[in-house]
Length: 154
Image (cartoon, rainbow, N blue to C red):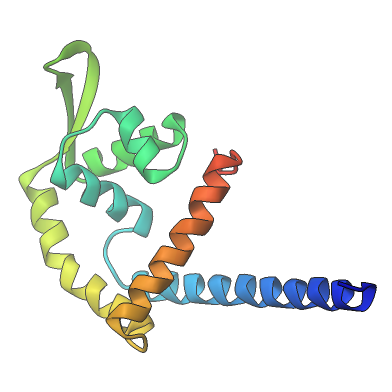
């Protein structure tokens, strides 16, 4: 590979990575804008969806949300104040807390799932099912590498 090819390669990669960054940012903004019509902020909904499937300790919820344990405290407090979640002693270790959804929280997830699916379809429906799976696979590959480098954001 000569120097011209190397310069072309790096300028092309830079252009490609810049374009990828711009597209991801625009798609994220679009999803956030559409999600504002829903009665619960996206980060709260993600937490509620997780605890609606299984009760978890706050530290485990923080891992699943990719946030610090300190940040998850505010999330749990907000959901609890809204009556969508509850914290109780962990039966396996009474010193630890476990967070679970209330019936109201589970009902809320069920009711808003349709609207959230509509938003996802509006954004990603242009892709076939196999294209969506491929996009997911590629983005997960990027995330795994990012996590291995310790750049998970917390």
